[in-house]
Each structure stands twice: as structure tokens, then as C-alpha cells.
Image (cartoon, rainbow, N blue to C red; front, side):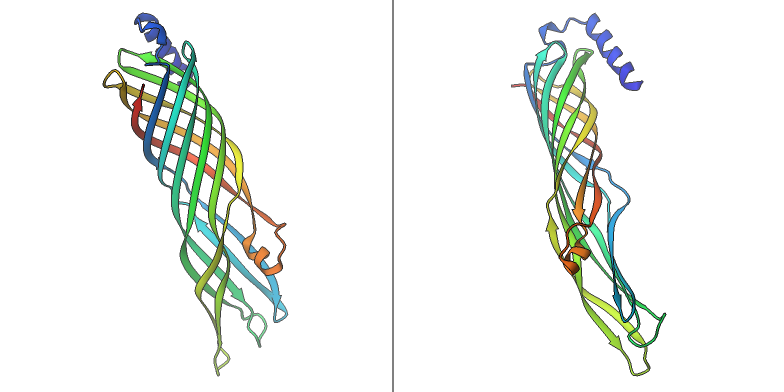
Amino acid sequence: MLAVGMVSLAAGQHARAADGPTQGWDGRVFVSVNGGHRWASGSFGYRDTQTVFQEEASARATFVRQGAPALDFAAGLRLWRHLGIGATLSALHENQPTTLSITVPHPVFFNRPTTGNAADSSSHNELALHLQALFVASVGRRLRLGFFGGPSRFWLHQQMVHDAELAPMLLPDMSFSLSLPKLRGETANPSAWGFHAGADLTFRVSKSVGIGGLVRYSHATVHLANALTTYRTGDAGKKVSMNLGGLQVTGGLTFWP
């Protein structure tokens, strides 16, 4: 409803102010560069189990999503009146706090497992190409309001934990402890299609330059092999899901050549 109201306002302003043949576009094409922040919350993880000393041993890797700075490069082309098409290349790099927790049964006594934990950070890189339909209209003499949306292609480079150096210790008093001095991992590179939608507001400061802000929500889901299970068994058939994208707010410069 808010979007419909803003479109109506822009259309009304345009009808009252002669804006020339561009219908709100300051030229037939534009390019823009924006920087800002992408929000993310929650965690992603996977688990593996096996039998050790006739009891269940388990391992769980957990990655915490925190959000990170993001950078956009965009271009658009006016087709007819307010309407056009465009594309945006968006990049994000995030260091995710990562924990591996391993529980191992006692080698002598039943029901006396011990747990070892290790913490590190993992690299999470997203590259997305957003293909979009554009609607641009004037809001007064210098303001330009735009709406956009369409399909998105995401490429992910994600560090995955698949093992750890285990240092078990059985003391003379039969107490059992486990430490994990170092995590081991590999990089997964899946890709997936998703979608995006958003709005932007640009203030024209000269004939060919504007400044503005943009809000975009994007989403896709990728499926990755459970690295713990794959490393132990060689079977990559067990998958886990990770959500990509999120709410992003950026600001920057727009140029009309």
C-alpha cells in the first residue's frame, strides 16, 4: 500500500510539473555506485554422528550470521516513458564467527561423554546479479523516485568446517577430556536463483550527477553438502540449506552520461 501511494504521489507530481520527454529519467541511461550495509541474523549449521566405543559420538558446526558492508554497481536504460530495465552487481564479504563442538563417549565407561569446543571465523562472500524492471518518476524538480524488482542470481563462496585436530586425554584417574586445537575446512561454491525488490530516491545536484539512497530486499536459498558427513564418509548426498541476501540499505552517486 505504501508503494502504491508513493507511485501515485510521483505520478501526480509529474503531471503537475513539466519534466520534458524523459518522464522522470534524467537522460536515457544511468550508472550508479552505492555502498552500505546488508543485515543478516540467526545461524547456519550442520551435524554428523557416528558410533564410537559402542555409543554415539557427534559433531556440530555452527556459523553465526551478523551482516556486513555491501557494495553495488548498477546501470539502467529507459525504454518508454517511466519504464526501463537495469542490472545491479552486488558484492558482500562477511567474517562469520564459527564454532565446532564434538562430543565423544568415554573410552572405558558408558554414559560419561566429554565435549570439546573450538572457535574461529569463516569467510562468507556473496556476489549477486540483480536483473530488474524499473519505474522512475519525478517528485518535484530535483527528486527522482524509483521502484525496481526482478530475478537475482547469487554466487556463494563459503568456508565450511569438515574436521578438527582432536587431542583426547585419558588421565590415570580415568577422567577423560578432549580439546580441538585447530579446525580444518574447505570452500563451497554453490549458486542459485532468487528474487529482489526495492526502491530508491535520488536528488539531482547537477545536470549529470545525483546523490541518493536505496533499500533492497533480496532472497535465495542454496543447498550445500554437509561437510562433516562428506569428509567422513565420502558421500556428498546429505545437504543443508543456507539463505542468501537480506535487507540492504545503501547510498551513493548516480551519473547520467
